[in-house]
Image 1 (cartoon, rainbow, N blue to C red):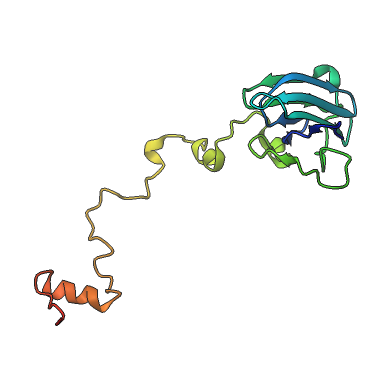
Image 2 (tube, rainbow, N blue to C red; image 1 turned 90 degrees about the vertical axis):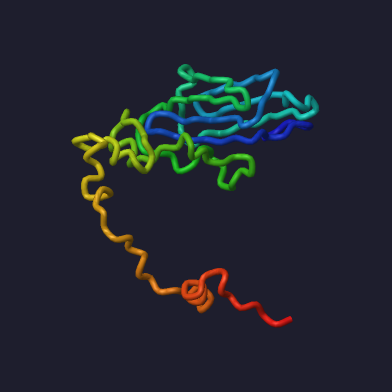
Length: 183
């Protein structure tokens, strides 16, 4: 997996129906990478500490299209967008390795489940309020019609009983009427 003196960099990954993201989560220089149909190889040197050399080879679970790979240097990480050879079911794992690789983790910020792909493809993701914001009749003034804030009703917590004896004493006598304990 790694050459002598090199360590694997922190790597995260995510997938869509038709592609895989591989993110090298460290700022590197002297970058070398190679993508084949079955593997991804990365080499680089840490920008802040030149003694840290990174190298990793990932053997993909299924084939990818190495001709269409794109990469972005985002400053603190390198992001590779790797199209899958065949659009289809999601991969159960990025690699063929049967054991968990300690440096590899899922990137949930980029992750999209199979059910998300089926629902809308290019729909804008607005998090948990997405359906609410995009619902028919998207007029914000009508979203809270059943919430009557203009009604001048009695405050609902006025008749809640006190939870402690001290609270009741304060209500009856006020702050100035408290008896001080004998010293």
